[in-house]
Amino acid sequence: QVQLVESGGGSVQAGGSLRLSCAASGYTYSSYCMGWFRQAPGKEREGVAAIDSDGRTSYADSVKGRFTISNDNAKNTLYLQMNSLKPEDTAMYYCAADLVGGSCLYFYGMDYWGKGTLVTVSS
Image 1 (cartoon, rainbow, N blue to C red):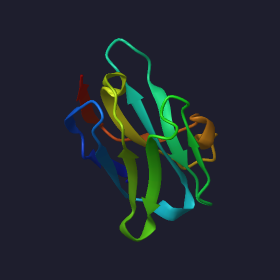
Image 2 (image 1 turned 90 degrees about the vertical axis):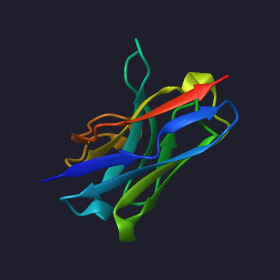
Image 3 (image 1 turned 90 degrees about the horizontal axis):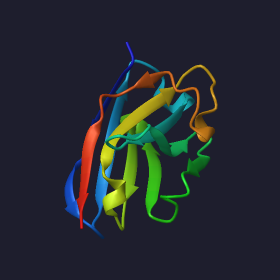
Protein backbone atom coordinates (compact mmCIF):
# COMPACT_ATOMS: atom_id res chain seq x y z
CA GLN A 1 0.00 0.00 0.00
CA VAL A 2 1.03 3.60 -0.43
CA GLN A 3 3.07 4.97 2.45
CA LEU A 4 4.52 8.42 2.96
CA VAL A 5 6.82 9.01 5.91
CA GLU A 6 8.09 12.49 6.71
CA SER A 7 11.22 13.34 8.69
CA GLY A 8 13.54 16.25 9.34
CA GLY A 9 11.35 18.51 11.42
CA GLY A 10 12.62 20.18 14.54
CA SER A 11 13.14 23.43 16.38
CA VAL A 12 15.18 26.22 14.87
CA GLN A 13 15.68 29.93 15.42
CA ALA A 14 14.40 32.49 12.96
CA GLY A 15 16.72 32.79 10.00
CA GLY A 16 17.76 29.16 10.24
CA SER A 17 17.27 26.26 7.84
CA LEU A 18 15.79 22.79 7.85
CA ARG A 19 15.42 20.10 5.22
CA LEU A 20 12.36 17.89 5.32
CA SER A 21 12.28 14.48 3.68
CA CYS A 22 9.39 12.28 2.63
CA ALA A 23 10.09 8.61 1.91
CA ALA A 24 7.49 7.14 -0.43
CA SER A 25 6.65 3.50 -1.08
CA GLY A 26 3.92 1.36 -2.58
CA TYR A 27 3.69 3.03 -6.01
CA THR A 28 5.81 4.21 -8.94
CA TYR A 29 7.15 7.33 -7.31
CA SER A 30 8.51 9.13 -10.36
CA SER A 31 5.20 9.03 -12.24
CA TYR A 32 3.15 11.26 -10.00
CA CYS A 33 2.89 14.71 -8.53
CA MET A 34 3.96 15.28 -4.93
CA GLY A 35 3.47 18.14 -2.55
CA TRP A 36 4.20 19.61 0.85
CA PHE A 37 1.44 21.09 2.97
CA ARG A 38 1.39 22.59 6.43
CA GLN A 39 -1.08 23.29 9.19
CA ALA A 40 -0.43 25.73 12.00
CA PRO A 41 -2.40 25.57 15.25
CA GLY A 42 -5.84 27.05 14.79
CA LYS A 43 -5.40 27.46 11.04
CA GLU A 44 -6.46 25.55 7.97
CA ARG A 45 -4.06 23.34 6.09
CA GLU A 46 -2.35 25.11 3.22
CA GLY A 47 -0.24 24.10 0.27
CA VAL A 48 3.43 25.00 0.50
CA ALA A 49 5.13 23.50 -2.56
CA ALA A 50 4.49 20.88 -5.22
CA ILE A 51 6.42 19.14 -7.99
CA ASP A 52 5.02 17.06 -10.85
CA SER A 53 6.50 14.18 -12.83
CA ASP A 54 7.95 16.63 -15.39
CA GLY A 55 9.74 18.59 -12.71
CA ARG A 56 7.43 21.59 -12.82
CA THR A 57 7.08 23.23 -9.43
CA SER A 58 4.73 25.57 -7.66
CA TYR A 59 5.06 27.45 -4.39
CA ALA A 60 2.87 29.36 -2.02
CA ASP A 61 3.62 33.08 -2.20
CA SER A 62 4.63 33.08 1.45
CA VAL A 63 7.55 30.72 0.82
CA LYS A 64 8.76 31.73 -2.64
CA GLY A 65 12.47 32.43 -2.66
CA ARG A 66 12.97 30.69 0.70
CA PHE A 67 11.79 27.09 0.19
CA THR A 68 12.81 24.64 -2.53
CA ILE A 69 11.06 21.38 -3.37
CA SER A 70 12.99 18.58 -5.05
CA ASN A 71 12.92 14.88 -5.85
CA ASP A 72 15.35 12.01 -5.70
CA ASN A 73 13.60 9.44 -7.87
CA ALA A 74 16.31 6.86 -7.24
CA LYS A 75 15.53 7.03 -3.53
CA ASN A 76 11.76 7.56 -3.90
CA THR A 77 12.17 10.60 -1.69
CA LEU A 78 10.73 14.10 -1.76
CA TYR A 79 12.54 16.99 -0.10
CA LEU A 80 11.72 20.47 1.09
CA GLN A 81 14.67 22.72 1.75
CA MET A 82 13.56 25.56 3.99
CA ASN A 83 15.83 28.59 4.40
CA SER A 84 15.38 31.92 6.14
CA LEU A 85 12.74 30.41 8.37
CA LYS A 86 10.29 32.69 10.13
CA PRO A 87 8.16 32.14 13.24
CA GLU A 88 5.10 32.09 10.98
CA ASP A 89 6.50 28.97 9.30
CA THR A 90 5.82 27.06 12.52
CA ALA A 91 3.44 24.21 11.66
CA MET A 92 3.01 20.51 11.15
CA TYR A 93 4.32 19.74 7.67
CA TYR A 94 2.75 16.96 5.61
CA CYS A 95 3.87 15.19 2.47
CA ALA A 96 1.15 14.22 0.00
CA ALA A 97 0.85 12.33 -3.28
CA ASP A 98 -1.50 12.87 -6.20
CA LEU A 99 -1.95 9.46 -7.85
CA VAL A 100 -5.25 10.02 -9.65
CA GLY A 101 -4.52 13.12 -11.69
CA GLY A 102 -5.73 15.90 -9.45
CA SER A 103 -4.54 19.49 -9.58
CA CYS A 104 -1.44 18.89 -7.53
CA LEU A 105 0.40 22.01 -8.69
CA TYR A 106 -2.59 24.03 -7.48
CA PHE A 107 -2.54 22.12 -4.17
CA TYR A 108 -5.77 20.21 -4.87
CA GLY A 109 -6.62 16.58 -5.37
CA MET A 110 -4.04 14.87 -3.19
CA ASP A 111 -4.85 11.23 -2.55
CA TYR A 112 -2.40 10.05 0.09
CA TRP A 113 -0.93 11.79 3.10
CA GLY A 114 1.85 11.20 5.56
CA LYS A 115 1.47 11.70 9.30
CA GLY A 116 3.53 14.87 9.38
CA THR A 117 6.65 16.30 10.93
CA LEU A 118 6.65 19.30 13.26
CA VAL A 119 8.60 22.46 12.49
CA THR A 120 8.96 25.08 15.21
CA VAL A 121 10.65 28.40 14.50
CA SER A 122 11.43 30.66 17.44
CA SER A 123 12.07 34.39 17.26
